Length: 374
Image 1 (cartoon, one colour):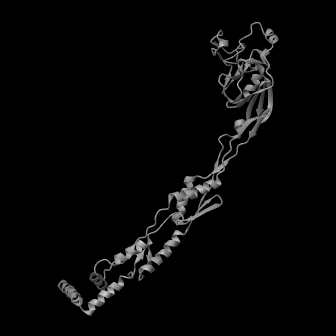
Image 2 (tube, rainbow, N blue to C red; image 1 turned 30 degrees about the vertical axis):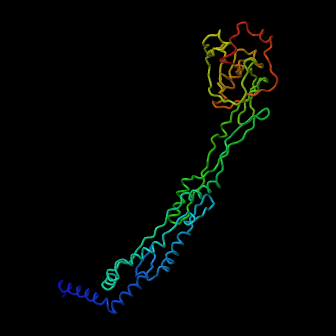
Image 3 (cartoon, one colour; image 1 turned 60 degrees about the vertical axis):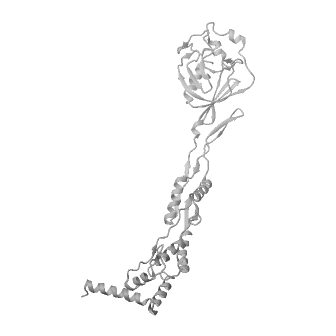
C-alpha cells in the first residue's frame, strides 16, 4: 500500500520530470498539443444545453445557432375568436448571445497555463465548460402591437337605443350589443404562448349598450300651440290628451327633457314670481290646488305636467309654461309614466291665446291657475 509519504514523493518527482522535460522534445510536444487543444472545446462541453464537444469556434457557433434560431422562429399564436394572430420570438425583438456564450466556453477552456492544463489532462480534474445561454425579453411595444391589431379587428361598438323627433312623432333606433377584446387578458395569453409554444385562445367580450331599448318604452310628445299631449308605449301612439301650454309672456320651453319626479296629491309652493306675489306660500292638496290631483316634474326648470281645476284653459296657450291637463286625464296618464320618461316639447301650429269669453265663463272664485310656474 502506498503511504502518504510515498504519494508526495511521486508527485514531486512528476513535477520535476515535467519541468526537466520542458526544454526537451517531450516538453515541446506537450506544449504544441496543448495549443492545438485550445482550438476545440473538450468533451462534455455545453453551451445553452447544446453539446459542442470537439468543435472549433466556427462550428460551435453554427451548432448552437441552429438550435437557437429554431427557438426564435417558433410560432407564438394568439387566437381571438376564430382568427389567429401568429408571430415569433424574433419578430417580437428577442435576441440571443450565442457568439459571446461560445467565446465564454473557449475562454474557460484556456484558463490557467499550458502546464497546469497538461497536468489536469494527465491526472484528471479538468473543468469542462458549461455555459448558459440567455435570450432577451420580448419587446413590450411589439407585444402590444399584436394585441392592438387583434383588438381593432374584433371591435364593434355597442349602440345605445335612441330617439329623435321626426315629423309629428319620433324616430327610434334600437340598441345593439358590441364586442371588444380584453387587452390585459390577450397580452397575458400571448406571453403564455411565448413560454411554452402552445396556442392560446381569448374570445371577444360582449359589450352591452349603456342605454337599452326599455329606456324608451314610454315617450311623451307635447305639441305646444296645438296643445296636444301624445303618449307612446312600446314605440306606438296609445293615447292623446288635450292640454294647455305656455302663454306668450311665459312660453313653454322647447326641447328634449325627462320626468324627474312623480307627485301624488301635490302641494303647491309659491315660486315668488311676479304673477304669484299675492298668492299664499303654499296650497295643500285638494280640489282647488293649482297642480291638480297629480304632477310630473320635468328636467326643464319649473316646468311640470299637472292637473288643473281651471278646465276652461285646456286647449289654449294659457299657462306660465307648464303643461296643464284635466284632472280626469292626468289621473289616467300618471300610472302610465315612469320616472325617467323622455318628454319632447315642440311648437306645432299657430299660437292659441285664451279667449276673453273663456275667462269670463270661468267660476267667480276661480282658484290660482298658474302653479309653480305653470
